[in-house]
Length: 404
Image 1 (cartoon, rainbow, N blue to C red):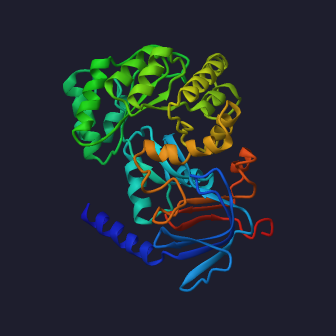
Image 2: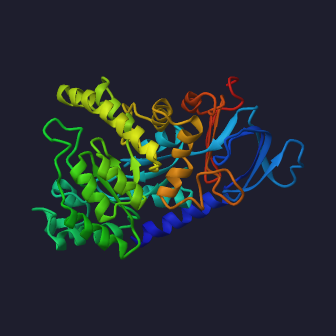
Image 3: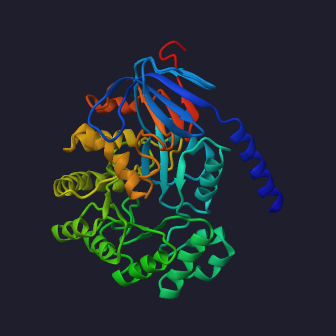
């Protein structure tokens, strides 16, 4: 273990030594906060942070690598707050799609913690990870192999003691969010997504135990009963929320609970290929999609904060993407400005990173993407990412655009 730690520190020191400073010139800038585009902007990046924002003609003094943005549109990196990233290739795919920050919604063996630490150290180029670790769910199955301490939970995770133990093992292993469930899954033909799993009492035990260590809770809940129990227990966010009813909406608004609808995942249930390919699941998706759209419109109309999650592992066959989720948000009633903010400043607030990332402003992390069209006019421009910068590292660069 000591040798591995020393190696990671050595690699991190090399990565830090190779950190470049950039001057991104000739950019049309959307800063994430104002519903406008600033033309002819220069963004100076130093030590992984946005040093300052200048204008065309400003002197570029110092050892900056100049990148001509060619009049394309620079905006904050997108966020996926419901992922299942568990390998380096999937992390690369997420990053190249324009996602610079993710929140894990559980993995099998703490791979998300490792990705977070390596990205933070500069060993791999992001995305930044809010790690979750192991799902707090009634039956762990093979997941007990993630840590020897989980062996005693082989027969179930239901009592207060069992729930507290799993929460603390996750946090001990480096989780900075805990995911649990209020209802069953939608993506399996043998489960009913409306069926409640953990009770309000059990969810409150999980929330309270994690709160002792300042760790928030995300709760999977399609059905209304499970979602209401989750909100009452103190969930930071409700994941999915397909069958929410009026009383639950009111509670979410009152308590400031975020909604992460993962609408694009329901589309994945319906479309051929992708991560799901089962006739029962296809029919279920067709039934659930219009319900989820009604939930979205109701939540948006009430001013409930809505964040973006694609609920996938960014595998080679994954078709869901945050850019498509944002496009759905715009189609279902948000302005383009609101939809982009859902994937940037709102998601950053959900993750408690709003003082660090989610906007292009002095002192913030240099998490930015470049697209060839104005996303405030054409939301589909987000689907054509030509540059990605994560923590000041150039992760993707297709410039000069159209000349390679």
